[in-house]
Length: 91
Image (cartoon, rainbow, N blue to C red; front, top):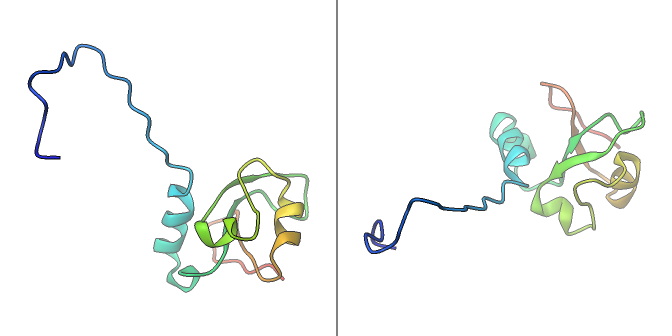
């Protein structure tokens, strides 16, 4: 990638940044025990809520953004939900 393309007209640029797993990565950074484990960021699975995002380990089990948090928790036997500033383990 060697720098900015000076031959391009940069007056209008449309950029797409996929940050879907970004918030799960932040949770892993804040709580290192979550590294390498399936992590879902979203609402409390005991209430009516959805998966906001998840990491790639959780995606291997079919979890994805927008699905019901309860369904996401049913997809993985040992999933880590993040809905507060504390490390929470859901069984």
